[in-house]
Length: 291
Image (cartoon, rainbow, N blue to C red; front, side, top):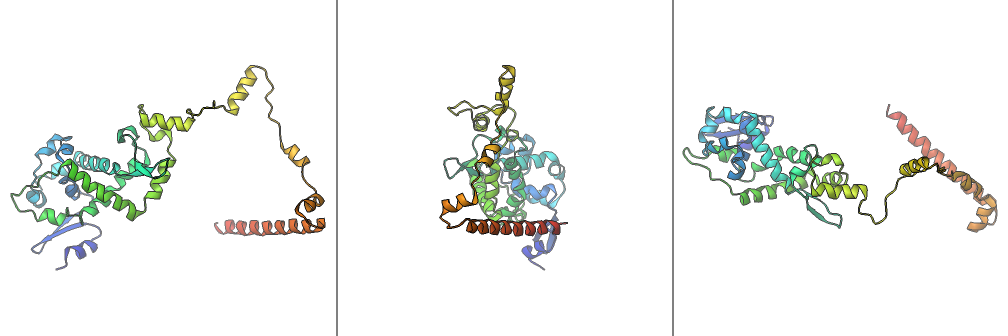
């Protein structure tokens, strides 16, 4: 009989528990696959769905019968587990601080929109957290081995926070997600915030609109509209003509850089032009090869 680890690797990602020669397959897309995370939730979290406060704390019968499948295989159960764990993972994301270093995401998760990429990332992390549980003392094998009649104690809020706070940074480092998190944070948009007003949204809007600048912000469009309303000429001069009139001759360049004759300048210009043409030809060839 193969051991649990080998059996898991050979079964297309399904969670498999074994005891006394018995094999139990729990597909990862089933509700039971999230029981390890459910049993780790503090009572304060589960109370958000009071019906699950009455869910058996002894997993013996839950894993061996279908008696409680109706409570597990539904969206309410998944929503409870996913929302609570994702919210907890969010607390341990770190984002760049404008003064250098990193800090926790300011404000609460409710002040950001559900489409904010970092909020979505906290949900994308859930399968990885579940895999981490398998090697962190909360595996399905341990859950299965709980004797009949033995109830699992509730983790305290602090204990659960310590657990998630340890695993989330490990996953971010292993997946090399920090550069992605940095880019997401540094490129926020107004759509990333909840429609309701909040301090974090206000701070973002101030930086977005530069409303804290001591100098009054103006735009060319606004100046043009004001000029039109007041019948003021607002033609922006074309500086290209002035630039063209100030182009130096080859002789002037030679004198400026210390060449004895302007012929050396001409050779240098031709060499630069040849290099540019070679570069353009090479890049164009690469472009053609993409078709």
